[in-house]
Image (cartoon, rainbow, N blue to C red; front, side, top):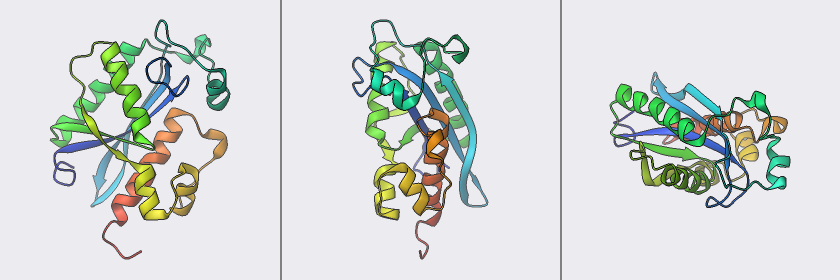
Length: 195
């Protein structure tokens, strides 16, 4: 992994949020999918998923809840405070970095600037000193899909890559992270081969 990605560990992340403004809208759900090589093919590995409590003073748009189907007040969500959820996420990433001999993680996401902004602002808000992620670099699967498959929308890019995508399951952090991870693996695995 370190040799293929220049010392970086790619970690596929998806965040479901209470809106589009990382300065005021809450992270409601987070998921990560680790990747590994199996006989020179990049494949999905360990997964992590956590409901997140809206941080105090955050705001949530009703329209966002309609899209995600998340009920922030549902006691059965098993939501953790944002700081604890982030620390759990980072602990798993650090273990994977050590296992793969990588010096840093790099965020992989569909429309990655969105997830990275929310993540970086949450890190700052929670005063977390050490993030395993590179602070500004990321790998955006929307851009990769545009080049490899001619489309930027996740569901359509997956269809063109022959990856099953169920629209009724979309906007669940783990489901979206899994499909994004499959899409990323598809692009990496076909790179340099005749298509």
